[in-house]
Image 1 (cartoon, rainbow over the protein chains, first blue to last red):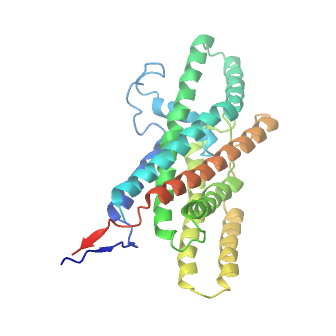
Image 2 (cartoon, each protein chain N blue to C red):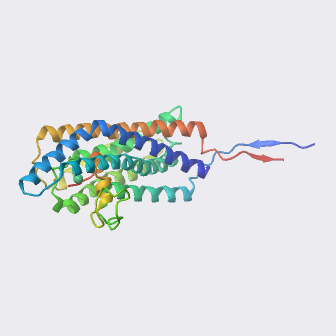
Length: 75
Length: 241
Ligand SMILES: [Zn+2]
């Protein structure tokens, strides 16, 4: 006869790979929205063509209002 | 812990709360930003630069769309930090369910990462800052944020180490208050003079603080609800025969 025994285990460890991925998202997002002054995407043309030309720092302009609203320093 | 579910609920909760923030800001905060940008335009016009009004309206619409997307991105990233903190702390946080626990964690993070830095370096609408000082102001802001964040993190470890000692409930907050007061007094003020009307600046600060606070609350509630439903801290059932 087979005895079936189910164990439900609560693990205390937080998976490192998850922490790594989430820290990456954190750094990228906060930099783009809060701090980028054209270092990232500043050389590209806006996708919809309305925000300016290459070199005009359109990503900064695009995320600009939230930067102010979230309390990050801006112009 | 179920890695995929943990990452998924963290990102989803952050994205939802952040998108709601972006949407609410369209109504709540944008009128202040529009007003501030108008003032800037008037100043620019006086210095004889020609701006086409129709083009400018289209540009502002585009920028408002950007705020929605920026809300989602900001929500994703703050949500990620929140998820990590919650995963490490939820077993020690009081509360009968994870929604309550998540609200407590969100409240502490809101206090340490938003309210405290905002008291020293409050948000400003456009038309206030001097572009020349941006890197200096960013350094000040980050320094204060880092002091607040890392002292809270260090003290949280200490709090845990002190075990059943009841006095920790008084000592730990007092040490945090002492560090923050010291930093508050020692750090230089925002160097830029405020040339915009004060009621615009104050209105902007209060409104944006309310919407950001609401974002943190939403993040806690949504994340906690997902965690209660999907419980990623339980591993899969293992059948032993
Ligand atoms: Zn700005």
